[in-house]
Length: 295
Image 1: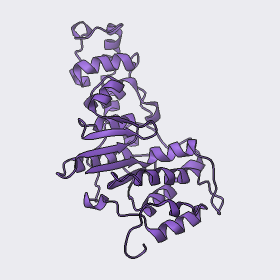
Image 2 (image 1 turned 180 degrees about the horizontal axis):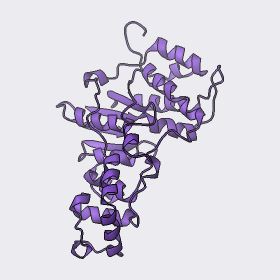
Image 3 (image 1 turned 45 degrees about the vertical axis):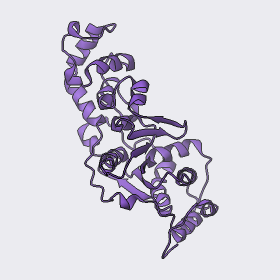
Image 4 (image 1 turned 120 degrees about the vertical axis):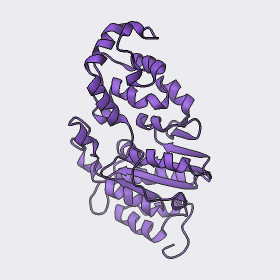
């Protein structure tokens, strides 16, 4: 059995910038929501997708904003995109998908929590994280928790993560602490780049394992003395940035594995929702509707 966990925020952003603009009868922008519906319908047509959940950042901000003023916020997000988040969650629910709507935590935290929890279930062979987000690479475990970049049709297991980033999954937060992550507002440590960070972390895994004296490093890096001096001058910041980049695995998700079983779309809810967004073609593309009241 596979469990598919979808990064709904990523899918909505991708649809907003890649799908045609479209408005609802009420004049609201709905192009990204329609794109999300198409993407989820394509996923749900796959017979191997039997258990699925979709996570969204309902408020964009999270507890991390209290830890670091520079962390990403919703400031600058186009209103036409931000206004589609509630509709995106409703779209996924109408399709019969479990939705994790995050407020205090982020969508990635929910996915990380779900991956850890459901992997421990004896019936689960693999947890598939439907996202190319590098933050989620830290969740990869062998070939049992994998990243799936659906657009490029690439699957990253633990070896794939190392090939892509040059570090093991456990080192991804440390890697992001050093090189920074512009999307999340993490500035990184001066002088450190992807090559130097991956080489040092491939040898030492975690920041605290990196010797303070560059002369004792087991890998030879150009400008090692300057890199070491920069890291030693910014150890507290590096620790903070790693905390920001580390995904939480204790999000209080109420759903059991059984709750994630896909039973089909809610016909009445989907028809009504599609009328609201101004595109009534979607119900005819649904592969399965749930049985019972509302079917």
